[in-house]
Length: 370
Ligand code: MRU
Image 1 (cartoon, rainbow, N blue to C red):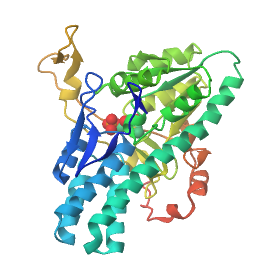
Image 2 (image 1 turned 30 degrees about the vertical axis):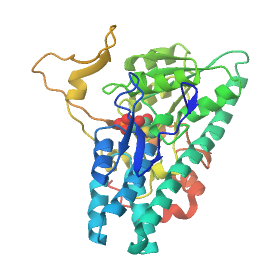
Image 3 (image 1 turned 135 degrees about the vertical axis):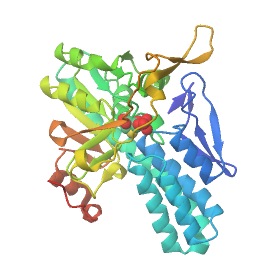
Image 4 (image 1 turned 180 degrees about the vertical axis):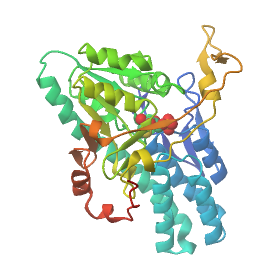
């Protein structure tokens, strides 16, 4: 997508390094960062220089290429792989990409590990971009239907967090249908949840929508219910970090509350994801999906820019009060109107999801706790 009119992806190779956009610096500064070792890749994921399910997966894919160069034995490669998987627990794309790399290297032979890991990393990145483009085409049909029911009027879409191109290699999941509708001349406007505590909506989604010229308004996280009650939201589209085979969705904290408000107000609630975000081993998302807890400083402090242009971090919580920082929540499938994947849209129900994905779903299902 465009940055100041120039097309970018979020990750690519530069000489012998993996080059990323440092998302910790956005929207204040557009900085690139080169990663040279598996340890640097792990730190970039842990500290959220890269974030978002698809991009975490693609970064881990390239991290395994660096790991293949560092490892002198299969055991060493496995331990570097484990160090990448440990960085963040909720987005399943991370372990999916690492396991795909390990399987490819095992099939090709350890002596061919570097070339194999490079080809696989590039395939993971290219497939992620292609999947998001396809999600855009399938989601466009949904927006087009809504637009046809209100001719000449703007379609208002609410989104939470950043499931835009910054969270993937290109296009985004939740934003791909929005970009497609905008390109098709459908008048769209996006309500952007600020998404505390790290403000990925206010900082990242707002920035990328502005770069593409898509009309949008940033709102405090608690505003969505009010807007829905007053007919100002036609559709909610969020992304996902892990989706079970029965359609339960883990996404950024606060997504569940938006789904409840959408259900109460008859607003369609869609979740957009590439198939690499499904966890075929799980059915019950509330019990089964690990929820990351991050440092309390993300709740107690906030970063911003002064009118003089200095980036500063301020404490915003009464000194001495403890804070809790749950990064994700789970929205049960029953609250979701549909899933938009690269293979098409479907209800958030196991037969429909598995129908779209065939053989892949035949992996080890963890017995559900009931
Ligand atoms: O903690 P983050 O920023 O990595 O959170 C992930 C997200 O960006 C959101 O949950 C997003 O909606 C889904 S990831 C495409």
